[in-house]
Image (cartoon, rainbow, N blue to C red; front, side, top):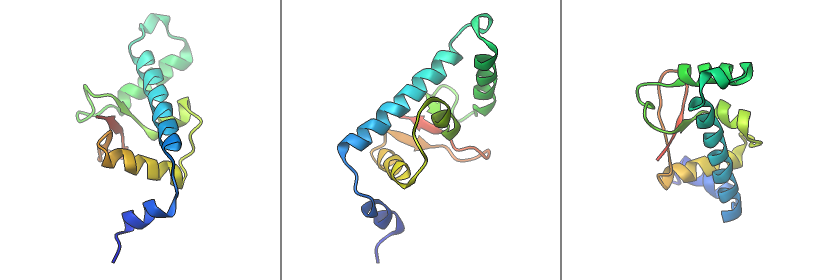
Length: 113
């Protein structure tokens, strides 16, 4: 009997180009997020300040000191849609140990490894 994950990944044909595109978009989102976090508070506009406070509130003890990204950050900073291909690519990146999920607290951050 095939596992559910195996059938899920094999149903969706993917190319290296698609995986690389998602990786570049994730990198853009991480750069945008941490540019805001490392910015001086006095130089922020109200939108950046609201994002800054959201990022600080979403941080947990497990993600402290690590580069992490939430699904909301991907929606904010990229044009990626959370469809089946995107979820399959996230599974591939987790399998290759490029990302890891930190469960708990109601939110699921993806930590860049």
